[in-house]
Image 1 (cartoon, rainbow, N blue to C red):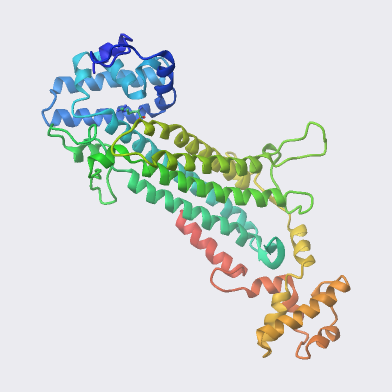
Image 2 (cartoon, rainbow, N blue to C red):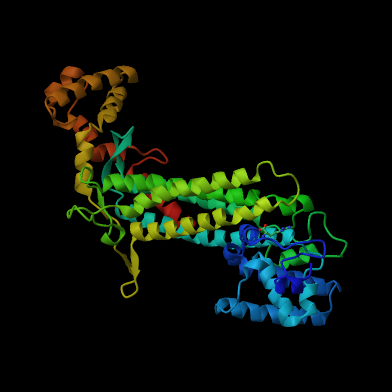
Length: 483
Ligand code: ARG
């Protein structure tokens, strides 16, 4: 193929073709208006390839110098918005290569020696995604730190823990926040794993079978930072696989979808908690909107949208995994369809993580060095809600077990006590000792400590339990982990 030919908009790949592409087909097959986003990776990949070609004596030092000079100018043109992206040049790769040849002549035409767009695009997407995953990792650290800040301030605040959305047992609000820290820390681990498998070099696979030129693939890998933790170059070991599989993109999107599912679960809770029926929290006004008809409304648009956008990312996962299904080896044009879902997944996830960090933890005030405007926690309605639901019933059963009753019998005794308290519309702790003793004579005055929300909370000292002492241990562990 001659890039000069392309540049003249002849729309023909070679003498082989008897007619140009129709305009409709051109628009259908062109990807430049979305894949131009890969330009930095494309230039980095080309520079590493050119440097290696020169080191191996495949192109001359002069040609290499011309390529570097041309790419430097192209970078400036793209950054300043002067670069003219052309639909008829199909994609980011051909656009940049054509401009290079325009700028530096034959040296530009030599760049593609021992390379194909097939291994080029696979490399670009991997490089781009690797760097995006690093940014996502940073955003996940920020979000976890925001959650830690809220957790730290609310270790002793009690809310009803739910199962089946029915009041179950008293729980520390700090503990509840740390549950999300656990989820996001696993998400971060998943991205690190995916990063390791993404950060491997396809270049050198050429179109599908490798090339007859004496390439040094490991040199290119090192240049592009495609190395493992020990600094060893990471190179795809099968040329057919290297150009064709997009499993790294699929597993990235799977990790992103899961992360969004965690965000969505949290959103659902924030939405419930800020409703009038709960009144547990407030989020800053800048994350809410009013209603055009009901003047009293403040709607939790941000968590609702995040819950909605989770569907979109899950959809991208379905799109990508279906894209791969049924593709024979090696490269097929189907793979051009990987980009839009991947780009949108990255954008959606990054924006969501950013906004959630701020919505939960607040915004840094440069003057005071403090974060301001994060989530407000209303402890009073939380405790009141815990008191309404007999949240300490299990504690009474445990108390009876410690007095010698088998657990199943204790469970039955407490069911009767709860029934009596319900009919008098009081909490268990409000039943007089004499009434409690009617249910079981071993009950003594010390039961009231057990029946209090605080007593119940502080008793759950198992590793990973909700007792404030445990929550503080976990907080300290996370602080060390996140630095
Ligand atoms: N734009 C193409 C893609 O995204 C680049 C590779 C094209 N290769 C080819 N043989 N048509 O996959």
